[in-house]
Structures are given as structure tokens and as C-alpha cells.
Image 1 (spheres, rainbow, N blue to C red):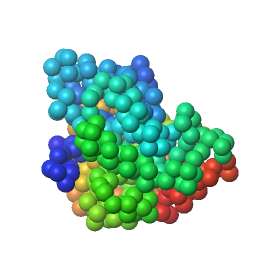
Image 2: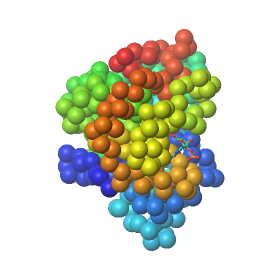
Image 3: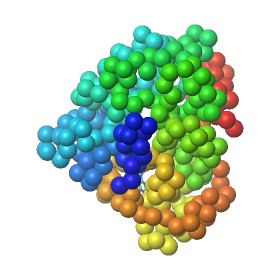
Image 4: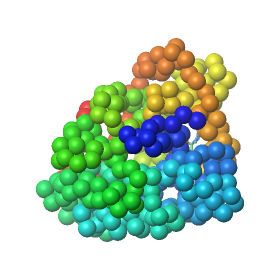
Length: 316
Ligand code: A2P
């Protein structure tokens, strides 16, 4: 398994298990199967509302002697309702308690926008904080305190574009160590990847399979990544699955990748993709795939009832 290396020498396994949309009742077993199959990187978030079950799965694997805590790399994310300085510590404490851990390997600001305390999904203008109310710098300073306290070994962000990254890098102190964004051949994010590379920020690709289980209404009309003819062609050339092509694509670009699955067979299948090497021709074909699409488009945070615009999220 390839690893990516942080500035202090710590490493993150390039392939992890995603847990967004993993149902309570399924995810405990999925975590156990994944660790059994060889995964050592698990990606979580408070808003996925399944961290207690993820924690049970981790505890099961440790109790069964499959791994020790120090062998695992566990990421979680600060939800939008906890961006005020005083809300950040309680948020990580809740996540740590749910996950049954005493530290996270990586803690990310989930989105660069803030809701009022206790609001899971802001629907009305009065349920949001603006950048004036709670600037990102306030949240980023509180994240740095968590690292000093040893509650998170590494800190970073998710869904941050270049200008948002520059904003928090400009306040002095620690730079984000990771930016987790949607990334796959329909959304290769070349500009952002280059920017992060230049500034020593590692990257993780979420929804690498195109999030086929999305519950978003408009998703039925979205282009399909797993059945794209180029993806299928590369899969058949190597005798591998389409999912494995998409995972191997990210690994070939030195970008961590966190496919979600709660199915034992697919958890194993996806893990095997860490052993697959795509060649230059495959990478060229996938680069020229001819479809450009963002599945998680952020419109749910940026309607007329929100102080935020899509341009607050994405560069283009
Ligand atoms: P399941 O959990 O039943 O395996 P993404 O990581 O892009 O959000 O995609 C997750 C979705 O893709 C889930 O619906 C998951 O279903 C499905 N999935 C995971 N691995 C594969 C695979 N190798 N081939 C096809 N679908 C997969």
C-alpha cells in the first residue's frame, strides 16, 4: 500500500474506507471487514451520523486483535454548526467519544461555511452565520489549538477552493495539511491539485466512484461514472472492475482515495485496487474522458435562503 507523507514524516495510507451514507446497522460490520481486509485508513464525519457505529467497528477489530489503535489512521470532520471558536473543542470531544478514541489522526473543517449552533442543515437565512459573524480564520485558529492539545495529530480542510485556502494560510500559524474534495475523472481538479502540491497540502478524493448512492433528486440525471465507456474499456483491458479503475486512477495521481462501501465483497474488491497500476495510456484516456461533472455541487448550501454563493465554494 502506497502512503502519503505529512511534513513531520507521519504517513496516511493512500486508500481508506469512506463512511458517508453508510447506514447505522451496516457500518459496524463494514469497518470490521475493511480492517480484516487490510484497510488502515477510515474516513468519518460527525454529520454522517454513524460515528458511534464506526467506533464500535473499530473497537471490535481492536478487541479481536486485528490491529492496535496506532496502526489505524482515522479522519473526522468538524460540522458547519460548530465553527465558532468555543464550539470546536466540544465538537471533537463528541466525535472522539463516539469513535471511542482519544485522538484523531486528522481533523478537517468539513465545509467553508457556518450554521448556527444546533442546526444540522440550515434552510433559512437566520440559521446561517455569515463570514462576518464567524470568519474562517476563527475556526482555523481553534483547529490549531486541537493539534496543540494532541486531540488531532494533523489538521486540514474539506471543500476548500484556492481562495479559501489562501485566506486561512494568510492568517499565520499552521497551514492546512490536507484538503479533501470531490475528485474523479469527471472532476480531476487539476488547478487545485497543483496549488495544493505547490503549498505542501496533501489531497484526498471523495466520491471517487461518482457517489452512485446519492439521495439527491437531481442525481438521476447525472452522468454515470461507473458505466462510462472509457472507464469500462480500461477495466476490461486490465480484467478489473470499473470501481477498481477509478480507485487506481486516484492512487496513480498520489491522491488519497476513500471509496465508500458497506458490502463485504466490494470492500475487498476496492482494497485490491491498491495493487493495480494503470499505465500512461490509461491515464491519458481517462484525462480525455470528455465529461465534466461535479456530483456534490453545494447547491444545498447556497440557495436564495443562504448568505453563501457557489463562488464561495468552487473556483469555477
Ligand atoms: P455499496 O456500499 O453497496 O458497496 P462513492 O465512494 O463515490 O460515494 O461511491 C459509493 C457508492 O458506490 C455506494 O453506493 C457503494 O455501494 C458503491 N460501490 C462501492 N464500491 C463499488 C464498486 N467497486 N463497484 C460498484 N459500486 C461500488
